Every structure is written in structure tokens, then in C-alpha cells.
Image (cartoon, rainbow, N blue to C red; front, top):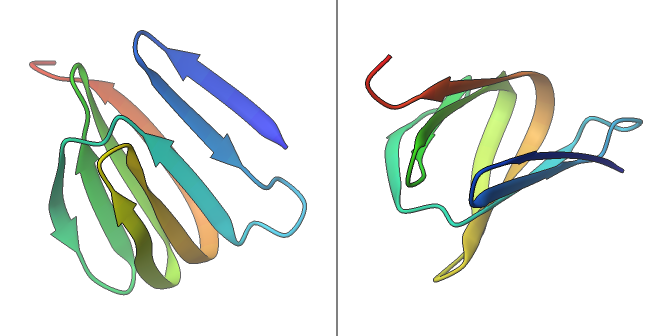
Length: 79
């Protein structure tokens, strides 16, 4: 697993299969379709690009995005 950490958010991505991304401290789902999932954490906007994307395991601590993950973009809020 690869781990990216930025302020109070951790993103765990299975680098080999590229099938799942777990985003902790997710506050809001901004956009959701089969090619793009856009999430908001406290200080980041996270865009997950791919194919056949779905959101599962939605809980108070985060979300799991599954599908063919092609790219993950982290953008500071307000940038």
C-alpha cells in the first residue's frame, strides 16, 4: 500500500491493483459519477479519476472509492 498524508487526511491506495482508495476524514462528497469522485476534507479537495467508480463504506471517518483508479489529485481548498 502507498500512504499519502497531508494535515489531517490520510489516503490509502492499493498501488498494484489500482482498485481502491480509502479517504479518511472525508467531510463531503461533492461529485460522484462513474469517471470522477470529488471529495472534500478539512483542507483538501480530492479528485479521483478512473472508470466504473463507486463509493462504498461511507462512514463518519471516511469513504472507500472502488473501480479502475487512474489518477488521484489533491488540491488545497481555496487554491
